[in-house]
Image (cartoon, rainbow, N blue to C red; front, side, top):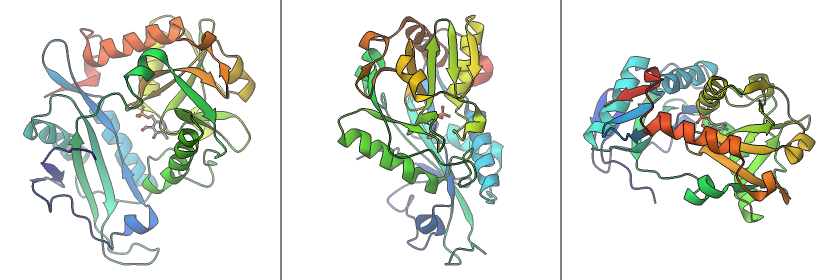
Length: 307
Ligand SMILES: Cc1ncc(COP(=O)(O)O)c(C=O)c1O
């Protein structure tokens, strides 16, 4: 079980104790899945200070998810950003994963949420490598999932919305039960989209290719970070649809996400990628990423919120 920080932020108040994260059984989101959340990491840097990575970008995405789902948080973007800092400071967490969530509380039951308040909470806990240290070092084995990524017209794919994760959880379970580390979901036309909780990149020589936002993927903040860092490092970067053949034949494949960071893929459906090892481009971008989020690199101060 996750050992969370004791203090939880709820719409401007830091609450503590067993009642702090109690949610009503009649909370609308619990039944129908209309809620939005974020996953954010704070790192202890080599300088000794700690900083939250791309805090405001995450909270802006939270508010965009809420807009898509027609939810109006009672707190402002600034309030929620301040709340994230307060949760880390008050729980004395120098490195952590932050989980802000906006949900519809109890009020009306039935599909139409008439008077259900939108509650925004933030909880934090220490979290190491999402797919394990071995995954970051040696790469992971992936399976093309039997579950497709939502079609852009059946879900609000740009939103990080609670109910939309049923498909991702099923894909993850299927992959694990079949002996793989992670699932890669195709879209309904058969092109690759993303992992169950990560965006997808392939490397072809000195070119990086990642599916475009219009393919129904989550607009990942790590994806955006890697696009910036790759361009700065002189790689060509294309946002293009990726076929299953391209995946199998790619020089390198990797996944990106706040939780998964930059995770190399060494095998897909029993086909070794990069000879079953971690490719040079992936390794360089992974090193660059960690240098920016927790190393000495300060070329992107706009991405770091010290606390
Ligand atoms: C479905 C999905 N795709 C991609 C990502 C990666 O997004 P980010 O890099 O913003 O964490 C996540 C994680 O939030 C996710 O849940």
